[in-house]
Image (cartoon, rainbow, N blue to C red):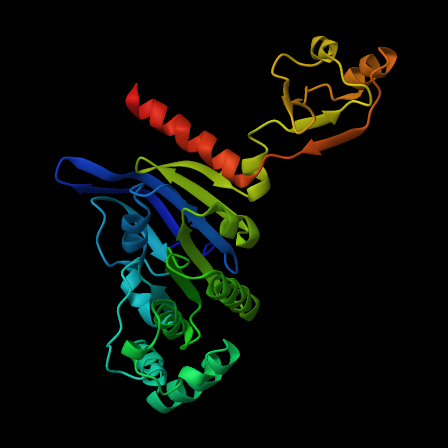
Length: 306
């Protein structure tokens, strides 16, 4: 049944290809107005999950709701979609390609052409308005397709590995576009295996590995799964320092790196100062999303291998 509390919800989605369960009981709830990331290694089941959420393929088990519709295709004109497999008509001009994609979602052709010209200018691609797709670089053509997915101003935007193949300049343009769409009021769901983009953009995220959801929450929630690290640089270096530090301490960058104890670092510092080693430098390092991702996916791989 549709769930009006979420822009998108899914319960127990399963998809089999032959004897393999590519998606194995995925649950998702995406709040209205959020930027939501679906993270996972290659082959984790991200693309299959997105296609089921959009109604492109049907799940073998479970149900989903998109913008209040239990049949996702009933909301298709309110949705923008950039598939993992890119594709535009090579003989079509950039402005017409964007307008054409908008027309497929019900946007008036003349309105689409006007919006396309403005969007290309704003993206720094005004020089390519009347260029044929075959004349554009791969990255520029990909960005034209991205603009085509938002020209009709969708309420919900789904981007499957949108950063793949983009150079750093176009990656920045894409991040700016995602933020602009969010500020406009759109809900955005995107998949990626590059943690830096998710860390900067996502309000919430889930991590999929082996076809199952292994984590759901905020970036800070994911980071909190790992302990913080400390990097200590003594004023007077000595091999004897190791005896006063936690067991996992090791030399690194002219000092010592170790896991921060649950009781904090104060007791360690008192011992170091009392022993005469002093403090030349001290930093507390929070784990990044990349570290949490590696831990979560590694645990999933170990579970599957057991």
